[in-house]
Structures are given as structure tokens and as C-alpha cells.
Length: 131
Image (cartoon, rainbow, N blue to C red; front, side, top):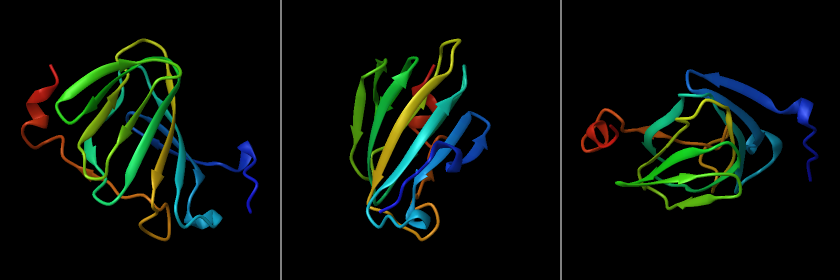
């Protein structure tokens, strides 16, 4: 068992927002990765996939445009999306306020973050899908 005080969550900044690594193999998890994700206004995690991981994205605050393969839907607080392993997806904050998400992936796939990602935003049809 591991308690995870908020001040012990390691944060990593990207050009689109921040990931707070809440649960990883470093904390003893062998099946789950749990992240607090903040999407800056105008930011987004562009089209990508997790070849060997399922994912659940839960919107906690703000609104996002969520893509799942070639479909999209606007999600707000309390909304969520399940992403099967290997499915291409993307999350964009097109608003003017921060969006916060809770993201859960499983199983873990490496000894550090437990997370794997394959970026595909430069490939078709993903490169042309978003206006």
C-alpha cells in the first residue's frame, strides 16, 4: 500500500500542459498508471496511441474536444471516455480556461512511468482530421 500526498506527486511540463504522475511502478503499481493532467487553454495532447494499454479519461474541470479514432465529442466535468488499447485518440482544450483530467492506464508497461505512447499526429488521416 502507498499513500500519495499531493505534495509528493511528481509533475512534468509539456508544451500543452502538465502531467502529475500520481501512481506509477516507482510507487509499487504493477497494473495501473494514474495521472492528473492539466491542459492549458489552446493546448492538447495531439493524436497518439498506447499499443498495449487501455485508458480511461475523466474530465474534472473545463471542457475538451476528445477524439477517438475519427470521431470527436465535446466533454465537460464528469464526462469520460474509454480508449481501447491501440486506438488513436487526442484531447484538445479549445477554451480559454484550464481543463483538468484524471487519466488511468493499464497495465503498466515499463519500470519508470509505466506509460507508453506512440505519437501519430504527423500521419494520415490524423494530420488532416482536425480543422
